[in-house]
Image 1 (cartoon, rainbow, N blue to C red):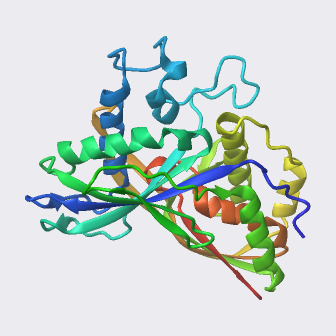
Image 2: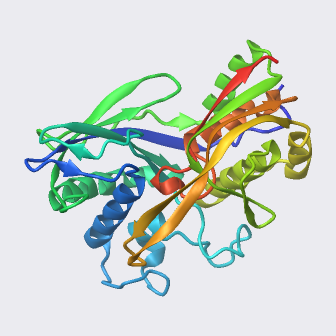
Length: 331
């Protein structure tokens, strides 16, 4: 069933659940917390690892070996055959902030977000832990109130395995190998689709999802546009952060995706603003949220969609946008 879309063998993810505890003055955060976490985290990371003291990375002679440049200012290397027309490439990490819209946290109250490291970024885990510890001291949200880094747990969302790798009490990192592989995703998807009537699919776009088609943002979640964007994201992440080219017959896959119809569109366009510390201003962010139902031969696409659930889709994935969940259903 899944021979038409090959597995990107060697593709890996590592998942970490990070629990924070509000400090003695509590926390005041925006309803959507992803951009706030990403901005504060990036600024702290840069201050800790930058050896050149520059305001931007593009012309920095040390950028090829700099952890900050790899994670936050990724760009195609000279002579890269893939994505050579783009000034930047997908980042090798994403943050999944708490989905709750709660804004005020009392002293001692906890909140949890998820950090996902992709490919070679997994080797940078110690940098992320040190950055989180310093970020906690510096504070976040309104008034830059401090918090405590209480616990980091490695998790495998496919198996449910969990291992605590860091306790705030002793501040010792105990690495655990719970990586998710594309091979495991493909195998799990084969079991799932084989036990169900894979003629229908319901996708819930949990956080604002903004994807492009023919160079423009699209407000309609047509199935083939989802597949196009997922193939582009997976192939670029393979190339730049795993060291191999994902080989698949993309035109043929897209033609088959065009045979899957969007039969119910209950999504709506969500607009909000986030503050960019780099641009020193508020900038618009948007995308569709809600449910869409599809009908057609979706079986072969299930592994790609399951991988997409883990790595998100479209723009703004680094601060949690593009999160979606799919459910196979008979129609």
